[in-house]
Image (cartoon, protein in one colour):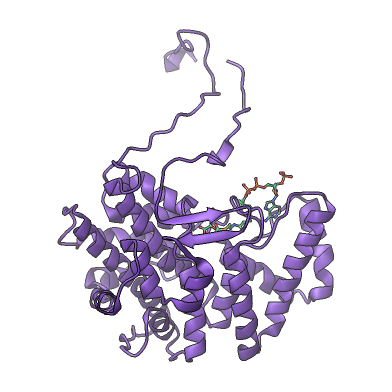
Length: 396
Ligand SMILES: CC(=O)SCCNC(=O)CCNC(=O)[C@H](O)C(C)(C)COP(=O)(O)OP(=O)(O)OC[C@H]1O[C@@H](n2cnc3c(N)ncnc32)[C@H](O)[C@@H]1OP(=O)(O)O
Ligand SMILES: O=C([O-])CC(=O)C(=O)O
């Protein structure tokens, strides 16, 4: 058989695989909507907890509903001993994304409702995942540094508690809010690679934790969530080498000449600016002034500007900053280490993963749950109608 790699929709680009009522992306106009609401409005007005409620339940809560949801998150937040005891055995150098990916199945093992597949049971499992991912990250981080985990502060919300438990410092209100907005922005993105992974796994009727575990693995890759840390790693390397904003034009040109990717730039769906990147850029500009990290902000801003200029010069389609370009910078300015930046994305998008898992399990958007099973096109060896002659090992 002839090798034929002419398959047009490589990487499933442009193929609609299912309906969803959770989020909508207009990649041409740069619009992102969660359950009907513009991301700009959610970033301005909403809290992480309220956005999580909205994504999971399909509508905004009233005051009592929101208070009950916050209480449920707090009540579910304590890290089970089975996980903290396991941490003592796991290598300290482990990547925190691997720690999360190994911990989520333990949440499944100890969930008394694991076999319960009602919508309510799945919503309760979702709350456990959303509440416990930050605990997994902060407890792991403190234990690997020989520090005790810190108690929940009822005066702080989900975002503020994460900063407190990770860094051991109570965050200023403005910083906690900036972090909270970044979590809202990263809480869902329709059929991103990780969300699709979650949906694909639970389409087999696997439990919610199996779906979330798949999502964590998919998010860790550098073409997806993993790029936020890499943006910062590359920037710190450049600064360490003594480079300044004046050197960035030549650096970008060199990268593109060598056909290397520039992390945090480009997007599979947005053909224009990722609206989340624009909001994050504004947040970063303010936080940079407050934390006296203007040098970092200006450095990234220059990379973005030079990239856009260079792509335009080459007549390529517009490649702009995506959400990962500025989210790592915000983390760095808030004292979050490089290898915790993708885990931060995971704790935010866990909301979207769980919402999509529930939608998938109950066929909410399509009327009934369906097993994903795409076709592939075989382009390997095939020696005619009856296949290749199979020789026993002695005769090969
Ligand atoms: C939360 C998120 O997951 S957002 C994405 C995070 N990932 C990154 O930031 C990694 C860097 N970006 C990329 O690799 C890509 O832009 C992707 C994977 C995100 C999207 O890719 P796609 O839209 O499918 O485009 P694809 O990777 O096919 O690139 C199309 C062309 O633009 C180029 N291109 C796209 N992004 C970049 C980039 N960041 N740097 C350099 N060139 C790029 C490609 O090399 C390719 O060029 P070619 O046609 O000459 O081969
Ligand atoms: O949607 C995508 O392809 C990736 C992305 O931006 C996200 O997951 O936030």
